[in-house]
Amino acid sequence: MDRMQRTLFESEHDAFRDMVRTFMERSVAARHADWEKAGIVDRDVWLEAGKQGMLGMDVPEEYGGGGVADFRYNVVLDEEIIRIGATGLGFGLHNDIVGPYLLSLSTDEQKRRWLPRFCSGELITAIAMSEPGAGSDLQRVHTHARRDGGDWVLSGSKTFITNGINADLVLVVARTDPDADGARGLSLLAVERGMPGFERGRNLDKIGMKAQDTAELFFDEVRVPAANLLGEENRGFVHLMENLPQERLSIAAVAVAACEAVLELTLDYAKTRQAFGRPIGSFQHNRFLLAELVTETTVARTYLDECVRAHLRGKLTVQDAAMAKWWTTDLQNKVADACLQLHGGYGYMTEYPVAKAWLDGRVQSIYGGTNEIMKEIVGRGLGL
Image (cartoon, rainbow, N blue to C red; front, side, top):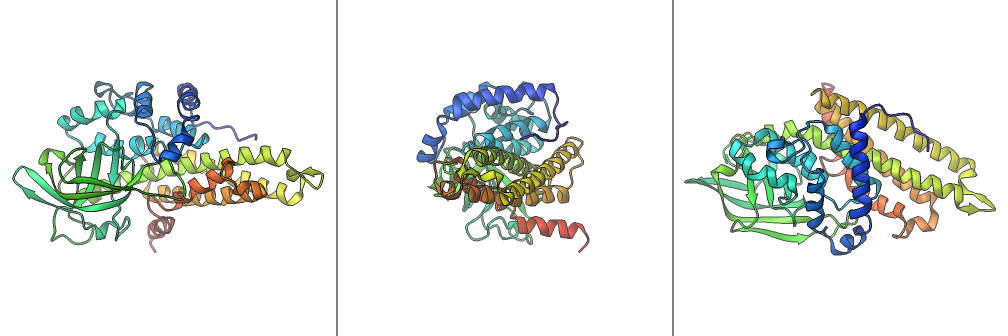
């Protein structure tokens, strides 16, 4: 499929893409089906990725990172992961979502303690916001922590936590001021593997993204050292709001790349699959449908790339990120569904990549803030 030429990337990003693509084809593609059966990826792939410089690209070199604060490298990695349908890899959550919290909020001591292993793949990370009774509604967070001497004592539970089983460091959103209203009085506490009282529940059985370990987490009087407070006490909500635009941009990058990938395989199928003595793509309805989907995906790509440029300049607004997230993920579901339909009965067979794309993509309009919440953000930005 001919595409509008992209001008977002430079030669160094193209070289990074070549390296990532080789890694994905050599170390991930053939193993992913086994990881889906197991419900979790092997930790050794994290170590391999760390050696290749695919973790912590924007972390300073003194802590073992790439030393280049350029989100385009994150976009390249996200695109190449989704290109082969490797939805079990939690690299995006690690790099795009947790990484910024550690870089912008951690103390020098915390950086020395966590970032080298973050970049090597020895320390897998997660962030725990959603709760069983509240989803991601931060005003209803019940997980709480009280100060006791040199520790915080943490109790509560979280659910739908990406990297939840493999994670060695979990950033937990907890209420540290019980008298504060709504989303005020929240803090971020870094809980480490092995802390007494920190337990993992089920590796949740999802309809898609089978290789991604998504778990329930439980905290029963976990003593978290005061040195593990990330950022400022009772300013957790502010910290979350500052970092959510990049998270939503990351989700949008995956969405557009997923649209392009499923369209590529469907165009190939439409040219070779015969019905009534002719390729199915030669029927006017199918040809028009594919023309519409390719056009909408190209428009989405153009807007997304402009959002990435704005983010590089530090100008990506909360509203622009919300628009990108809801529009592209809705489109991802639309494209996957239409492409599955074009495959006919074969589209319903799990061995066909289009079926996996349809299943894996459904959550995109849910996590990172549901698309209904994204529209609410955009609407409020209009002064409504």
